[in-house]
Image 1 (cartoon, helix red, strand yellow):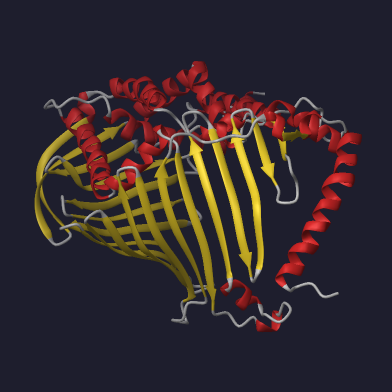
Image 2 (spheres, one colour):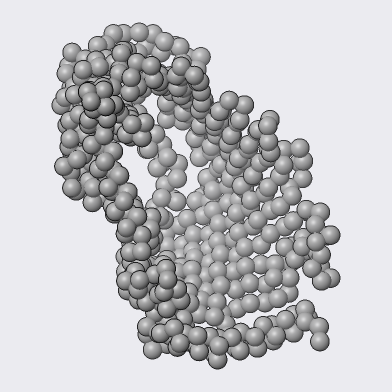
Length: 524
């Protein structure tokens, strides 16, 4: 009986991974938000973490200020954006001929235009789609979305088809009464909502970051001066080491889990994020309930198993600080549910962060008694005189993902060429080249984008996608009135069937015949 109870207290792998990730994140960025510029080694450690994150954020904001300003403006004002898409194919697909034209010819002679308007504040969206597919012209496809309903306009119908979020359940039940209850609904307002708000993020930082920070004693931090070499540069640094014992780590983990168990506000935030992913659909409420139940179960299992957790060497994290930011780091921890299932996690690498140039080279690794793995992330980013030259490589075993980019910004116009490549000796390799230009100014923007796809062994682009984009702010988004719509969600099964058989079906067939006849693709 004693052995069985002991086994029940063992930390499950799922709970263990959740606790490890939460602890690492909270000990890092969350804590750093509550540190003031004092002289203790503890405060200097977290201040360096905070400064490093803020420095990189500032560099991104500085480089892409026009784009970020436009994004913020679009959250406050209605914006209309016009997209025109075309493509070019060099693929040998003529044997897949479609009439007198092969597939490549259809692609090369096709365009799609979309006019899209959105008002994020008032939760309104509208759009109109036009297409010319190899001479077959389609116009009159419209869509509208508000917090209450979705509407769809089709070129062969005089009225718009609509369904209100509260009536989605009835529509689904009429179509499939064996699967749906009729009580389902969708909150269309979630389409206009983002992820966590600034207030939510601050709550998590304060409640958990401050709590963990307060548990860390000054004695756990030691510093000394050390000269190191980073990317061929000799740097005078302050080396700060945080050393947490197994006992202290368990205390922090236990208090964190206990707080999570009783934190109803955080659980509400988690549920809200799950509902956003489900687009506010009440049909998935039971699934979300199950996820939240598993979350509580995982926390209980985690708390019960913390005492049995093995962390023989505790946790060690060392940073080397130069000019108030981190120049080098070495993080390692070995832990597991018992002494025979220990896994070592480590992060080692360097950062050389300057105003005009940022370089980094980081190794992430794990190792247990059976296997080991390693991932390297290396980058060289520069922004000088309104010009950028960037290179980033992510290497996992023999697989290499790389990014190379060049940009220039002059008189508000950004020209760029960005190449994303995959090198896989055991599989397919190739690249995507994203080139073009963009201009953001006051209440207008325009951009031209080209995406070229090519295998590694062929310098010729097999397929290219082109997009011309024009945007501007507007006064408001126009939404049709309810009397211009056909509310499918309020209809019974017999009414829906009759409507589609007597109205939608015949009008669609007549429209299709007329469309194909006008394009010369219909033979009588």
